[in-house]
Image (cartoon, rainbow, N blue to C red):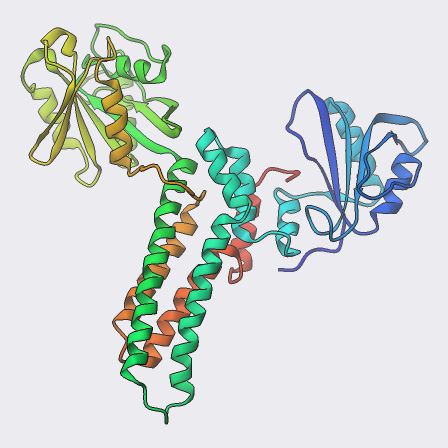
Length: 447
């Protein structure tokens, strides 16, 4: 994929009213366009207060004009930014004038795509731009900024450099087969491979934490009707987002609430109680509960501790839960049973005692919830996507297989080559054009 030679333009600020709005243009020979738009020659990289002019010379708006020469710009091309008032109508007028002067409307993510194609940033950094915009927590924003500044890419490049060094050692034995391979050389290769496996595994661990920050975890609340699911949802959310009633079956549909637990985004889903019912609306809600369960990262099974025993409804619910999904058993209403807040482990399962009404045991729940989804606070977490995790997993598989082929240099070399391709796909050194199109199409217009 090569950069296109035409000029692109878009409104770079969010839709709606605002104090400031920005129209951005990128391409070639923009000095002439800037002169027509502003009626003056702009000095590169100097903010100039000026009018933005229509074709008849009338003033469309007034604001700051900035002109950047190539390659000293975000995209690596010439860039013109017009910073005016943030009203939708005036921004559209300025944008339309840019289109009249030969630019075309930019596609989603096309500015960042050009930055990537012009070697201003690599693919991992380009994706982190969108992740920074979409970040919903402070931790996620910090992680995305680290990736944007190149920390994730630097880690990948260092691993690739170690991999290339190992490949050079192996390729030398293939190019000069008449030379006997010393045992010491074999051991050196094995040691380098072990170190490389450890390095890639460490990057994967940090990336998995970043993936949790980016995507959040799907947490599903299930339990018998009137077990207190809605009360617990309200307690965790810190507001009344679900209707609470003593009447069983009040929740007819899944209620979704985004929340943060110690800076980690979670998507909490309060479901309709799983039970047999003749109510058609409630049956539809229960069907959606089953769908939510199939996509869950962890299931919170709410039990009514005030009953002091497992009810038949609870047994029926447990029988419907997918075995592959981790679960936490929450014994609610300890304010009625008299049981103290805490954790017990039975048959390898975690049982937490709490009260959704008083909040007792809530901190323990938050801690165990993060532990169950695999979150552990580490320094240097990278914002990562599913494709990054898949590429790292592929690299680990090929490196592990290479370890099994130490005595077969040709196979060993091939596994190393495949591992390098997997790592290179993260930063874009080896990425199919159709994948690039898919990645950038998910960006917002003007970025």
